[in-house]
Image 1 (cartoon, rainbow over the protein chains, first blue to last red):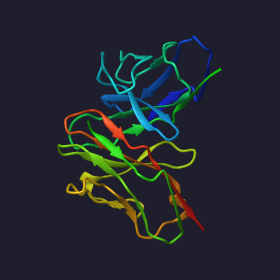
Image 2: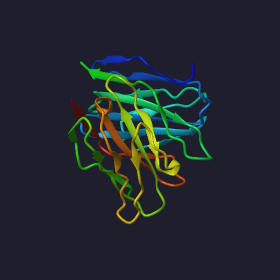
Image 3: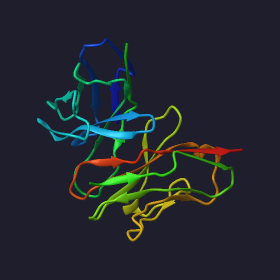
Image 4: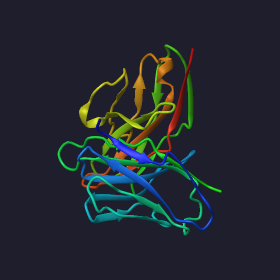
Length: 114
Length: 109
């Protein structure tokens, strides 16, 4: 069953803690993305990666970090420097090149700071 | 900078009525435009893309470069069309997909 898996579905973080959100895909997609979804704000790009061991900042990268050691995996770390981390986080992937197909999205992780 | 504007946060129509969800964009080049939909408790999914000129679930969207618009239309709305709709733009040669803030469509019986 091909797709993108995000885990956990819900995550609670204490103030000052770093937390890591997992994103795994078995679609053999080259590019992977992290978006943050807030009510009334739409989706905003945090980081993206087109190939292994390379990634670029999106529009709201401050307070976040990523790694891309494997093609299938693109974990996102929400650091203590992120001032307002409570949000819904979406991971996506797509093939690069050729006809611009749409992105495939995961089911999301809801992060709450307690 | 590229931008996508969806002027309506909420849109409510009755079943069987026509529906149009507006999307305007600002980008000087040749954009690639998409509509994504998020049904309740489901993941965000691609509805249609302008390059395909397709009709999905009765929805169509035409790219109007003169008006920089990509409005989503359906002649007869169904209750199952109730969802959150996002318009998105991808700049040619870029990996970044820019989303609008979304329109919540409610189709009343």
